[in-house]
Image (cartoon, rainbow, N blue to C red):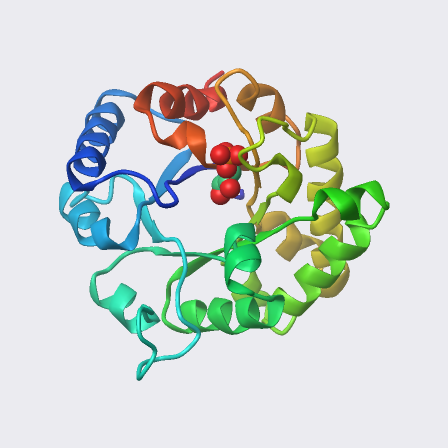
Length: 253
Ligand code: 13P
């Protein structure tokens, strides 16, 4: 059975005190509430070691938001897989649309980063998704196919099974406009079919595919109810326990 996951991408938000408060609130919440999904957070990297200390018993998964494709060296400002490994976090988000947009990240970069994480025994959360223009032009299937193939299809079957995929249509991120549950399901099923074609149905069925883009307490249940949607990658609504916990509870019966 593939995992159900609710992951919070904090992006570039919160100072140290605010980040610590939210982590302690999440710890308290997790201790007092049985959940039907795994919970991950991806705080700014400067707080990853704090997160490791607060969630010392691995109550929730700790992820970075990006990583260098290089192992070490003269790459000012970058963070390596070995650094993440050495502080024992669980993995990293890769190829978020904001990294693509503001930092020129491509699926070739993503491919190398995903492989580096897997080689180190860490989990990549690989993001893809089309822009509004691409969707309006009816190119969304083609875009998703190309992104998925370039970023992931050099992996072995055993490797790709360990990747978490997040479908995040760019037009739905931070805009308040969400893909309908049917639109999410359509693309998730399509991604799974691409993987099934290349690696077989058994492999495809093991991969968690999360939806991201304006997931909120009032729409999470309907989106997560779709058969190929295995959870969410949450931006804005992950910044307050009140909202994030309601999204986690969307998996409760
Ligand atoms: P929002 O939930 O704020 O739309 O962000 C989604 C996202 O980009 C998560 O990675």
